[in-house]
Image 1 (cartoon, rainbow, N blue to C red):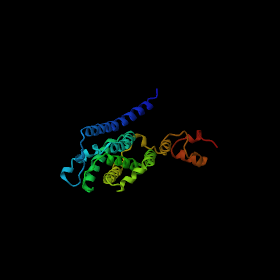
Image 2: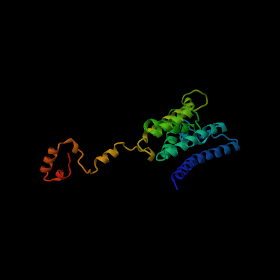
Image 3: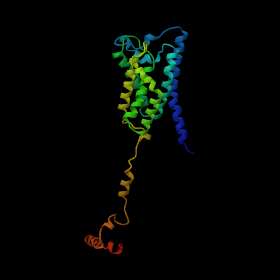
Image 4: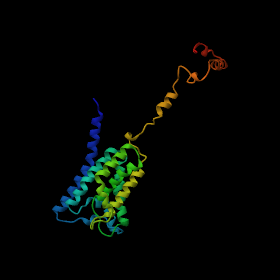
Length: 242
């Protein structure tokens, strides 16, 4: 029985499970916030203030309303699953790098207000997948980046201050960090990205023994006999023909 499809199914389910559980956790948090009729925006990043530093860890967990959470949940589930499935060697490290550095960038350069939501991480994953197509330059990475660009090109407008109340700094910071992660891990190639050299077989063939010398038709019979005599053998006298 061919186990490859089964392995791929298991890999896909595993890749889908972890982003799914993370999104489920976010929804539980938001439902609790809603049931308590409270606002947890104080857990966001507040730039350049000491009390805003913990928000680097907590801000992606907090959302203003259900619409805000839903708009972040779907692309995170898609991009997170894609990253885990196709870039298994670096997916977790890339996610941690994007999660932490995006919050840090917001704390350093953003406007002085509380910044909340998972959108910075989402843009980070978007930048990672697109950047992998640029920096890895193999067919798989390029195709994935083109697919993501086709379906999520509209998100790129969020990199600029086009709408009041939107933390475009989180979007831009996450996207840049995602590109950085793609560049930083570009040498850690997945098993299905390893390209075999088209010359390997030719090199191996050149090292194989041949029944006849490869230059046998480039020399005259007299030249071959003379070389055989110089080597002290009579191989050519019994194994050549005109």
